[in-house]
Length: 354
Image (cartoon, rainbow, N blue to C red; front, side, top):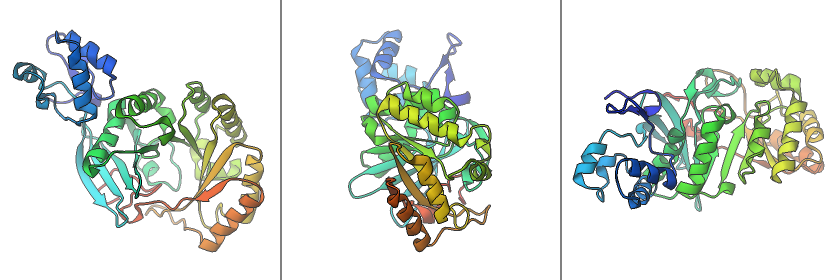
């Protein structure tokens, strides 16, 4: 049966759309099994098979009767399929995942000795059009549903045969343009998959009023704001979508976030040689962030084919760091993993060649 958008299914008996079960809580799943005429305890069993066992078809849940499994065969759980898999020398794996409607998204599994991080996408493509980012070059198609976001984590966990410890919403798309599904996915990852809120990071370029709205949920997640420039003129050059949202307004909203949540803000800053990596840029950035409860992640540029930006030299990077530290700005340099597989920050796109 062909899938409807977001992998929902139409119940032929009632003409109602049946949403994918992945992303539902144990309470929601219990209510659903009761609607099917099943006892309450089936809800907990279904929850375990979806989130702990990673089942991809309700027909494979062996604790259910054969008759009921046959009746459930076409009810969607909401899992994707691995379309392509690229492994970098450092062990990072980039996945192209095919969704029920045929769209392709990317997600990345990033292992270290003590943790497994998944970088998830929140949209098919991205409308923000950052000049240095491969994803924005491919345009925007649609938002992902909560099940499609959660599925990425379960897919990586299954492939690595290792429990995922951290999730960063830094893949394809702008999370705060898909706030409802992102919030639902965060809740599911925390309460159903079992990942602590402080191990979840949401990254945004900055959408007016959305950071404030996120703060009002009082989550203990990390907010990462993609700044990339210390002034509005340069920011507009690198991020055309930033034109209607002045930098001073964005920073004011970030300060509100800190006041409401008590959580510091991380600022992501991609260093582009000769563009935003000069000492004067560092001084200007320090002025913007002085007295701010924040941390700056400097990310040396990762190359993509469409533009000719360059990565700064190590000396230039360290000079930038030195200025920030002199001004009492918390800073670290983050060298992206998965560079050789085009799985690093700014390199994601839905193509086998990427």
